Image (cartoon, rainbow, N blue to C red; front, side):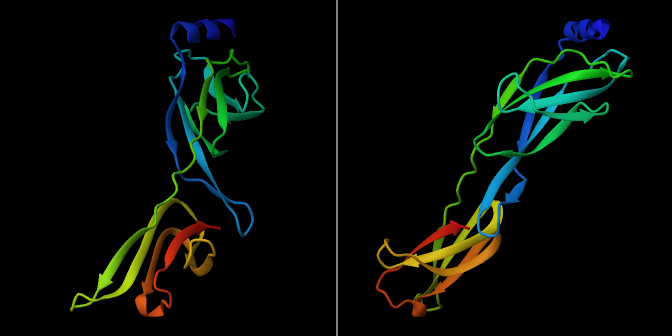
Length: 190
């Protein structure tokens, strides 16, 4: 395996983060949505003909890799459902046909960002005479899950107005339905 290591070192084989994909969402029970993400890893292939695969090692502490992904001859993979706000450390080894492994590549780290909360947009809907008859509330999120629009007259006491499931929120509030002179709304993910 020494020849394999020397060849890898001479060729400047390095692990690099290619992109982050926001796609994996996990529900932690019926009332709480926990967003997670995927990390896409890619590296330059070894030019050594003895290499038949790669192992990706990762964990939450530098140099400590409790997780391993065994790959064939692929030079990229996704690590699924990493946690928002957590830092992960990655390293890769090359494997030959006998199962011998090279030393680990240089370590790279990545801190998974928290998703940006959606902003509730409002638009007043008017009839042909220009009279307001409803308010449209909408939002788009990178998360898919249960959401609730709540209303308040005083910004202190909030009550459920309506709810739904998905990443797009679209609610129409008829002004005739309001009994208070002013009404506030907020979007909550459950």
